[in-house]
Image (cartoon, rainbow, N blue to C red; front, top):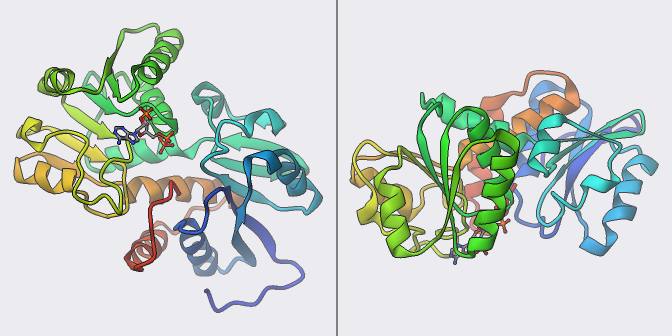
Length: 295
Ligand code: ATR
């Protein structure tokens, strides 16, 4: 815990989700407040799905200044907000709420966090063939921002229906072709052959399933970019094996840090102390009881 006093003026921020116990966000955000000398604190709020609406009302009632939203509430929270940022509206998911004088505005910083992490490695998505593995909440934000930046998408998912739904959504928004395939060996082989960038948004390989990988590493080719958004472990089997095969690999920690930094900036209007947040996240992830949690 940061060594800092709570005062009568302390501003309250937090994370709403279930589970929240293993989240890295409290460590990251509290380190940021401390580094900037802000009288603010970030707390975990474990909220069950059936309690979501009263919990949102509680933001106003208790004058909480801002929240992150995580599994399972990123989509369900939308009807309870007063305003949506256009990006969050298009993605259909919110991971950050700002309380502006009792008006709650929803943002999505997962998408911008992913894009920043990609760009910071010098990778431009324009006209690239991107293979997205998975079609859950994170895939939604990533597919949207990549389509917006002019990438060609192939989406593979264990359950084809979710891949098809996401592809249809992108087609409707951007009027461009998106392929949806079931995640099975033949389809993986075909898709990966033409992929410039492969993004794993599934939970396969996440701690404690360290020996698992969403694609057979033999399908990864030299020169491809492999972005695994899992951040626990910091290096997944997919990342290790892809690197051995000559791919450029990007892990999930940078996306985690960037989405947190963007949330911090929405709340405070100040530039986030990104290196402080990165170090706090890495330190929290080193702790033995940290299991995976989306934020
Ligand atoms: P997130 O918000 O992190 O994206 P999510 O919405 O629960 O989490 O999505 C999890 C993704 O991981 C889904 O695409 C899921 O596939 P299904 O839609 O078929 O369930 C994928 N996933 C989880 N476990 C998987 C496994 N063992 N094999 C393949 N895909 C898996």
